[in-house]
Image (cartoon, rainbow, N blue to C red; front, side, top):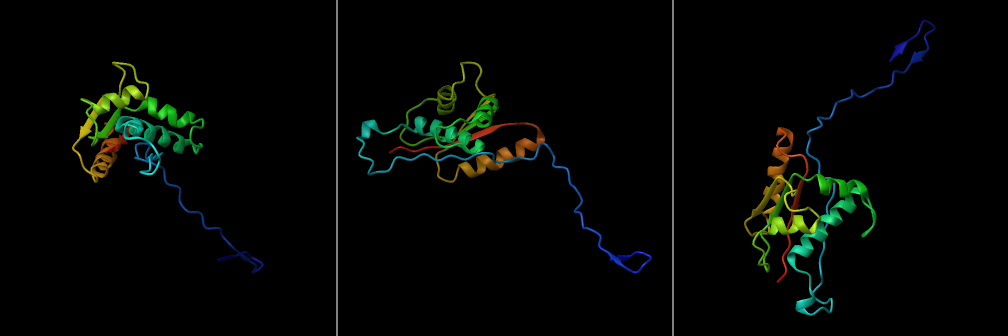
Length: 156
């Protein structure tokens, strides 16, 4: 505390130093989860396939990015889906798709030849999304990737 000539104390406001955020800092901007309960009253043939679930989960993540309600408008999230340069898919159980990442990209509306530059299909496993995200976090600061989508689904 400082004093002016008359002896009256003067309080100095503490101002935290500003710190610039590196524009390549990786950030999770949206998450989505979709499930069909066992007691949903659907016949096995009417339940969604893993590719439908993965696409729906990515669309839910886009809505989450905007804070939109389910099925609501999500312009920023939709723009990120279109800007993705990397789509990482955990190999789904209960699916026979030859290339699930390509199938998800197609379901998201990518035309043939305009898909994300890297389509990755990992091994099967419940903990596989974590290393996929970890690797994406490392790729972003290096400038290797800008927008990475990670999804998985199982339908048995």
